[in-house]
Each structure stands twice: as structure tokens, then as C-alpha cells.
Amino acid sequence: MPWSEYRDKTLGFIAKGMLSSSKQYYSQYLRELEQKSPSIPASAGGFWGRGLAPNSRLRFLTFNWGGSPFMACQYYALRYIANMAVKNIEFTIYKYFQKLQKKGEFIPSPTAISYYHLLDEAFHTTTSLFLGRNLYKELSKPTAYEKLIANWTIYLIQKNFHNGISGASPILMSKDNFSTMDFVYKILKSPVFGMSQREALDWMQQCFCQEHEGFHVALKNYQTLLSNSRRFCEEIDYLWPVNREMGLMAAAGSIDKALQANRQTFDQFSRLVTNSVE
View 1 (cartoon, rainbow, N blue to C red):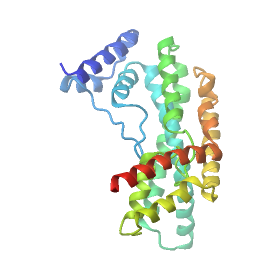
View 2 (view 1 turned 45 degrees about the horizontal axis):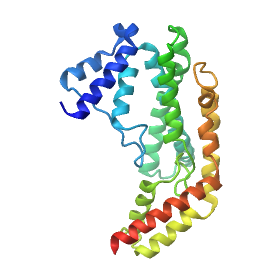
View 3 (view 1 turned 90 degrees about the vertical axis):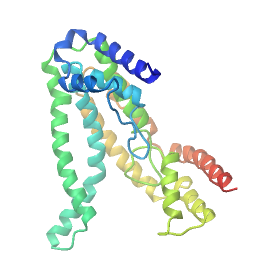
């Protein structure tokens, strides 16, 4: 048996064992997936290379989310926080669409797509709010294990997603990393801008490593999301203080911290790009 298959079976066995008192509620969909393949699918690509956790951990979490009514509700608490980030991004575009529509002006396709996507996200947010914040209170009290896994996932979303501000995108609620810098570098080197390696790196140094208005816009957006996330989490009684107060996210919302981290990352990225050409 391959190591990955053995690992996934072991993690699934642990999750099912810890949730054995709720085995009558185990997801029929997961049962069918397990019958088709020894390893259920999971995606860790995320946004710009950012995922909640590696594939093996996502599979483990999937077994948990499909293993009890409480954990199913907790999944929607996690999704609500993610939905709020998307709404935080697209609400400005939504208002711009309405402004153009009111004036009878031309509406670009990307603007229209964002508008209708936000309407879709509003539905997801509403359902996630009810399921994640209210419905679990009508169920049996969560076990110590369920509380542990539930808090771990909220901790992970703070650690891996909502963990800083970006110098490249005011709507990205995560600190800049190699993937972000590589994305910007490829755009600057593309025929659209046609920059040389030196020109691209110079512009990136100004974008990522020097304070500018974009950082302040990003911080404002970040603080709005932090406030909304705290408002949601304060009504969930099983959360640890670090999660109820979104402590990791709050601590990461700093322009000085972003600049310090970006300078280190950019220095490594710049050396890597330069050495790869040589």
C-alpha cells in the first residue's frame, strides 16, 4: 500500500473513531467517494498558492466535517469567514456597477461578473451565517474533540489566509509571498509591459518594499474584515479566545510588519531570479 493511501486511511480512521457517537450521521456522499477510491479528493491550491492546509490535512478535515452534525455546522462557520473576505473584495465593484447602471453607462464584462458573483456570495454568506452561528446551538453539545478540530480550523484560516496586508493588492487579506511576487514579475515581463528583468525588479521593489498609498488602502480593507469576523466569532461559544478575538489576524495587520516581511521575501526572490538567469 502506498504511503499516501496508508496515511489517508489512518487519518480517516482517527476521525471516524473520535466521532463514533455520531456514526449514524456520517455523510452518504463521503461513503460513496470512499467506495470509488481509497483516497478522497482534496484541493489545496487556494488563491495565489495559498491553501488552508496540505491535501492530507484537508482530507482529514473532510472526514470530520462529514462525520457529525456539529462539525458540518462548523464547516459553514469557516466558510462564512471566507465568504466575508470575498464580499470585502467585491463590494466596491458592486457599488461601481450600480453607479454605471443608474447612469445608463456601459458596464464592462468583468464588472458585471463581479456584481453577479457578489449576489451569489450574498446567498452563501446568509446560509453560512445561519448554519455556522445559530444551528449548532440546537444540536447536542460538541465533544472536546469536536471543539479542538473546530478551533484548529479557525486558527488555520488566520495563520494561512488572513495573515497580513499586501503591497500588490489592497484586496488580498494575506501577506505577500513568493507566489504573489512571481505573479507580478511575470506580468511586468509580459508583452503587456515588456520590462527587462532589472526594470521589473525595480518596480517590484517600490511596490512591495516601500510604503505607499496602496498599503494604507489594504490596511483599511483588512481592518474592515477583521471587525466583521470578530462580530461573527463573538457569538460562537466554543471558540478559544485567540479565535473569538481573531488574535492572529489582528496582530498581523500592520504596515511596518508587511514591509519588514516583504523586504526579506523580495531579497530572496530577487536573488533567485537573478541567479536563474546567470
